Length: 261
Image (cartoon, rainbow, N blue to C red; front, side, top):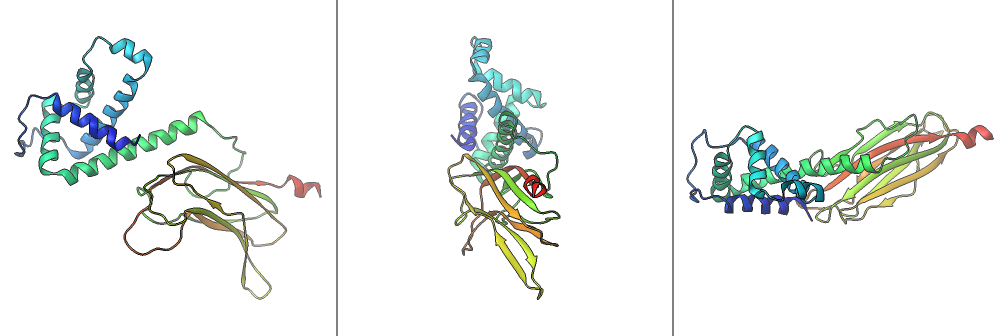
């Protein structure tokens, strides 16, 4: 299940539990919680809901009204349930687009946490030297709306180069033909660029992390470079954006076979 519908349901539950005024008049300044703080509160509310599903936590909180647990979350951020209720009601009735943007930010926070947990629970055996010069992880559309993450890295030694990444493309991603494209680039005797493409990897839009591991051998070619695009795509018209996560990016060199020759 996607995080945003769950957050929305939790917010509705908290509103339903309130006995306050359901009107849409703007609350006083002291009653409104700033957007950044609402994002933090809703993120922690979602995490609290997940914890309450654990057997050990259910045993601890079984005799307590679940709403009180969410009230504790709000208080931990320095606000009252009345302030939270007034802010949420006002956004629901008068500022729905603003509330939707808040939900999007909360969803982004949760997905980043999911990426961290996935990385810790399923670590990869990383060689000593990672040649990758970019970030280890990326988020779409937070980091880039459409850009495919271009890279250009020198290949200073011959051998087997290996690119690894965990890539998660969501079902609502609007990319046309998402894929990972890599190639060796070098100049021939006339100064013209030549390209030696690696095996291209097609990405599946199913919301699951896909382990991408591709390798290609470079012979002795002075000045060669490794170039390409993570989250490459076909060009298309109109307004669209990507929705994906990229984690654990590494580029390594295995030159043992070259050394044995």
